[in-house]
Length: 327
Image (cartoon, rainbow, N blue to C red; front, side, top):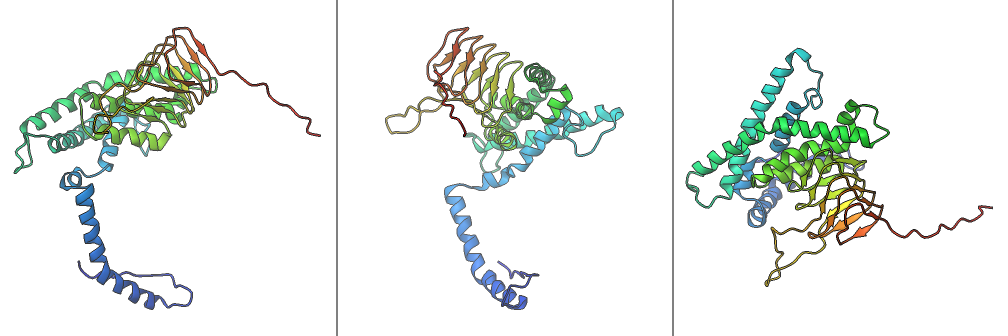
């Protein structure tokens, strides 16, 4: 590693900037190469390999999401106002750029996990063809995704008395932010695309506090009120016209292991929520064999690990409040 000239512009009490420069530069020039080599070796041994480095990290996935969501809702995700007369051009350009970037990402992910690729060339014709098919399928589903999101916005407007307009919901509600990502990521998950759907879902999780695994199947007119702390697991199936509040967990009851003590994956672990169900804040519903029957209401802070029939009302027995005279 070459010599690094490190400059300090702010003096430290008791030391001259030149002295600091000399001491730090000496350390950088003599010790930094060793640390960098150690970190590289650790990364290659335990986590990162040339495939991961070639993937280009998360930012490219975020860029694809921004382009696709800009195509779904022109003007919402742009940094600057757009000319209404050029909307069609903007949509087309965003889709084209997203398509090329996404196809490249999917191709690399598929090749990384392919057992039949020509390893010397790092390519695989079947993976390239599959990446094209997946990308085209997602793009053809964009109108359907747009319709689903329109229904989610309508559900939010009907379900929240504080909502003043559809525009307010689209521009500010975390529910729509999270669902606009999920409905894209879910389509890629359905095609068994590695890595990318999960990066997308965690992007939404970071921005909204809503954690929806891309594998979760969610029906029409879905609304998450407030949203913070909501968790929806991978094998969860949610019907139509479902409304949930903040802090709700639709999770796994237990994690079965095999004879070697390893977690058994690929099994149904999360509950099914049928149509027209309302789940209030803080409720926890667990288990792959748990079904919440249609038109049921689950009260706040309920802990539920078994199924309930349709039209059920589930709530905790409330203790009587203690009221004392403040004087």
